[in-house]
Structure formats: structure tokens, C-alpha cells
Image (tube, rainbow, N blue to C red; front, side, top):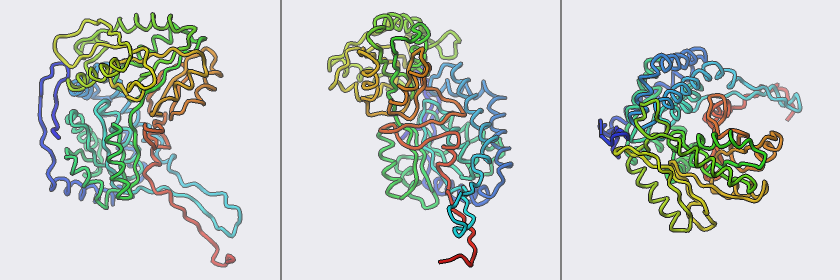
Length: 463
């Protein structure tokens, strides 16, 4: 694969990076393993200093880092700054909490003859992180902050269209004081990724990406008997009940579907609206989307960025055409669009019926599917009629009702009166074809540690 920076706003290729050689891969793994041998015994206090320093550097240079996000994947600059701050918050969270999260746990054994038992949490070794382009810093931070804090070392294979962001994260950790080799960015080929997974010193794989990539690499990890976590696609339901505060709900719907140009796995992709308020919601939603502004992502007035590449825009167009060919109705919102760049006008899809491929797909861009349902029960059924199980949201003035509905949605995350949210102190992950495992908080840091039982037993204990 070609690692290259292409500005989505201009479609101009800025810089190309050579693929790693086999010798570079071998050297990187040697270095990562050697770093692990010392890093695993480094105190939590010393690791915390590195994590806090990384957070401090990101915040002190937020504009510099954020411009890279906008350059490589087209993110609106204000959103790029928010992502950089979120990444800093994740590093800071583990600086403050890693030691407590991995503290030994005494076990309440039933019989004193069982001894004094406890669980300790020890790092495994080298981890491979395979990460996507839509949040080039956040996706990396949410795996390396906990896993480096746990004492593991990490090699990174980032998306091919954000090579400068990947290199910036490598440089960040060196500046933060991380030992040489403990975190390294590589530009490997697909075959070299397989080679990394198979190396006996590599103890785990963390992937965020497409179903196809997840299935292939999870199979390779399974063949090598390596632990893995998979954060894959999503088609989050956005349920609107008849008692929702409609004006505020519509604003969240427009935001929830169009932030990051709709290129978010937890974007609000399926609006499921009860019949009593459907027409009103549709009118207000259409008006809200029409107020978005396409343009230069560095311009503060821009609210809808280009997609990450022209190929992404072309593929999304074909996907919409396929949905229409299968019977859906498509309404394009006629926003003024720049003459150049990977822009895509928002589309609202309705009349998407069973059998339409759109019912089983993820639209990674500003395409909204809106469904009319009879009542709450049908809304729940529709929300669960998906191969995905990542996030979702329920809008109602009755918070207790919202919680009851949320408990019936088959996903890893559900929010009441807010689109699916990403924060440093909230867990992230899904079920079904959205993957398995969790990232962030204590759940994330414990994904790649050895939960070892240590039991001190009286030598005179009975057999």
C-alpha cells in the first residue's frame, strides 16, 4: 500500500512515504522487545510522568498538531482541536489512574486452607495497533495511553492516508520521555502486518477499522493464538420518542450525523422516529441540515468538511445509488459546494425497506437513513434489526423511560438524550459485527495484561 498525504480539500498529493523494509520491521520488533524488558519493571509513577508529558505537549502545541489532522483527512479545524484535546485528556487520565486501575486484588477465598490469594495484573509484551484515519490521534491515544501505562510496548500500523499524523505520534512519545523502542510507528505492507502478528514476541493485536480488515486480522491473530480487540463499524440508531424535546433533539440529530463529515463509527446513522412526531422531525431535520456550510476546513465558518478522499466520496455515491436502485428514496440537500475537493452533499434516505442492502450497510459520510415507526416497541425492534451493535441513543423527556429503552438496545453503548459520545473517562466498544473488547477506563487497560493468580498457602495445609 502507498502511504501518502493527499489534502482532501484540494485533492493535491503533498508527500509520499516509503514502505518499511523487512529489515526495518525486524529492527523495530527487536527494539520493542528490548524496551519491554525494562519498561515492564518501570514504576507506575515514572510511566505516569511520560503520559502527563505527552498530554502537556499536545496542549501546548494544539494548533500545530490539529493542522495535521485537517491537512491529511480534511477534518474541520475546530473539530481537529477538539480531537487533540481529547487525546491529551486520555493520556492524562492514565497518568492519574493507571496504578489504581491495576492494583493487586485480594480474593475472598472460602477456606483459609486455600491460602492468601490475590490477582496481580502484569504486562504481556509487544502489541500491534492497527488504526484508522478518521480520528488519527484519538484512535492511537486510546490504545497506547493505557497499554504503555500497563507496561506493554506498542508498534503502530496507521492508515495509509495519515502518515504524518502517525509520525507525529511517534515523535510525541519520544519528546515525552518514553524509552527508545517502546512505541514505534511503521509503514508496513499487508504481508508485513501478517509477519508482525506471527512474531512470537508480539502478544496482542488491537484493531479499529472495517469489518473486512477486522475479520482478516482477527483470523490471523487466532491462528497465532494472540489476544485481540476489534473496534469495527457501526450503524447507530437515533430513537426519537413522541415525548422528546423536538427542537433540541433535531439539533443533536444534525450534529450526531454530520460531525467529522459523518465519518464516525458511532455517528447517528439511522434516525428511528415514532409516527406521532415523524413529519415534524423530518421538516426540522431537513431545515437543520440545509444550514450546514461546506468549505475550507480551516475556515471557522465551515461546518461540513470534505470526505477523507475522492475515492471515499465516489464510493459513497455508488452506495446511495445502490440503495435507490433497491427502492429507497434519496433527497439531496442542495448545499453550495466548492468546485474542488472530496465533498459530498448531504443525502436523506427514506423508504428503506427490508431486503434493501442499505439496511445492512454502514454509510461512512453525510447520508441519513430515516425510518417511521408506530411506537416505542417498533422503535426498539428497528434499532436491533442491524448486524452492528456499537452505540445508539434514545430521546425522551422521561429519563427513566429512556433508560428502560436503552437497556433493550443490543449495543455496547447507549446514551439518553445525546448522540453516542466519546470521552477519556467513558468506555468504548461494541458487540455483534461491531467487534469485541473494550477500550478506555479500567476495561481498556486490562485487555492486554496477564491477570495472574498468586496464592500463598500454608505448607501444612491438608491435601
